[in-house]
Length: 509
Image 1: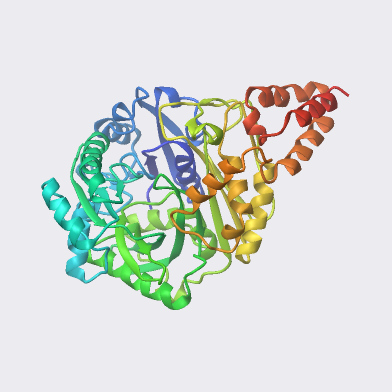
Image 2: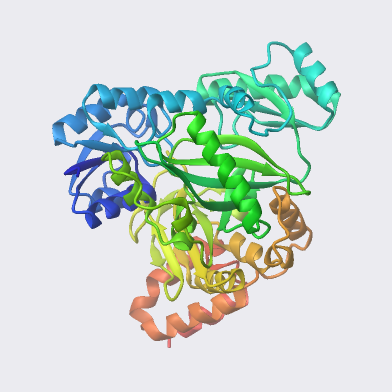
């Protein structure tokens, strides 16, 4: 087994991998940029090394620096987490060249699946169903025009090297096509250094469902069930759950077998995720493959009882998968909320700054994967993901109830977060009934704006809890919480002024 693993990442995922290393008796090495010197992952690691300025391209994306630290620290493996270098085939090759094991797929598998157009070409050969459109980048506006006319509007333009909604445009009519194509190509070039864009039929109100796969280095591949990822904002996932409310055992088997075929066609090893679009008739179409551990992997861990990071490390160590497909059992339901440092009441504008107070939820069925702590200053240089809050129950209703309770316990002072958004989502009747698709969140936010002025669901209960805390802590301890409320009133769950006044009076008793 590896003796020392370097985690080429930051934030909550770096903390998650460090914990797995410690559970397995492996030393963990952290890297950090100048602004991350005091970050939680640095504090949790056994060793930590600076890799440069705040700019990711000069630190976390600098392959030479990461490899240099691996050699300096004596690490015999590197875990890339997600984002940054996790899907960079050049990095995987650099690890191999340095004699350090990359905990993930081979560079060849990344090359095969990393480009969406190459992946579509491979799936076409493998007989995997995918959304009608082009399997290669568009050569001209005229070609885009011809394909769009043939498959019919609306169509979707997508960056071949893309992800996270970058280089993506929904086109409703021919009049929008030219400007949308130019915008998608330009954004793709800026974001990925690759302006290749392809076109596919836009499925109206689809569900986005993905299948977790694992493959060892001895030819064995399994699927671990699906995740519902339809709740998205600007094509980025916000809430994920497992299993999907609409997937029955037969559909799960068919999707899982298709995902295994996708992985095997690419010679894939380690953890991967095959993403599908599902139409209103439950037909599913291959979308892409993510060649890394996903942000939302905890929901799969909770419903299968498997530790996916442990599995990644064992497989990278050359071991066989320790179970067969028929031994994978799904039980219960899990839902994950991505907690971001952003302001829902100001168009989700990023909210960096010092965390002046942190009240973390706990209790039955609650898991919190976090990269923050009280007193830490959230930098403005990276993705604003702070933590993931996951609720687990014997069924979906219990998972929702536990997560609602935990969200009402959660408070982050000094900055603004999107916690209030999740209260709105989980209290929505359509969400509770499982009636969701990729347009759900836009509709909910529109409905919320129209009803502006109404108190946020759960705010009253949260206000009672906070006021009670003032009384319990007394005057001396109440100061930081009051200051946090005054600095960031939206983070105190949009509490109205009369409650603030009552809370202040309570704190002075």
